[in-house]
Length: 287
Image 1 (tube, rainbow, N blue to C red):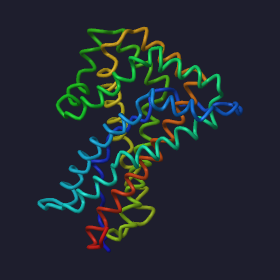
Image 2 (image 1 turned 60 degrees about the vertical axis):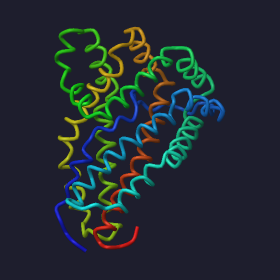
Image 3 (image 1 turned 90 degrees about the vertical axis):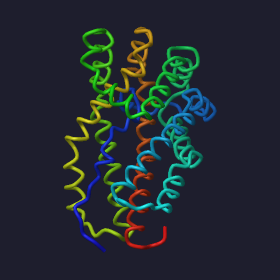
């Protein structure tokens, strides 16, 4: 076992787990129908998003290999990353959390509102725009450019900047993503312990995680602004306003809480598995 100062720089990236407000519904609405929740999952193109997330994960795995196994080719870690980011497995986790979450949180009327929005309302245009932006961000050059052009866009298109800035502030997206990212990093550290290659106590884990808070907050704010500008810049302002309006409704609050819960579960499992894999290899144990 080894005791080291851990570096999780490659994990300090904003994790956008939803773009709606995160309010929790009061009361207990009538349970939504499973078929409606499944239909909404497909309308939101969640399987396609998970496919993009796999590509993001493979890039992260390559960065982690460089950080933890410098000047080495570790094919077993590459293979493990491929397994961890298996889309079918990810879909099973996310679909189950999504359906069960909506069944417990959303009423039939709220589900009807959500399905209408994503089948015939602004969501028809918003979802493809979000997916395109995520795919675009697989190119580091595009991502970096989007993250640095906020001031220029604000000067050229103050209405767009106002909508996006207000959207982020109203929905507390930065803090939600900071919380999710720090929790995922905490699970990564737990995985390092479980893999047998690191000797870390709880105090050190918490200290290292909280040391990342301000950097993660700055990364989250920058990423969110760049991503939303990339995704929504070409859309009608009325569509963006409709999204904000939905986010302020009970239906939108229910959906977003389900998304944050589901992606939180998924990322925590993924990061813990990554930590276990790295630690196991460093300790010479079989994965």
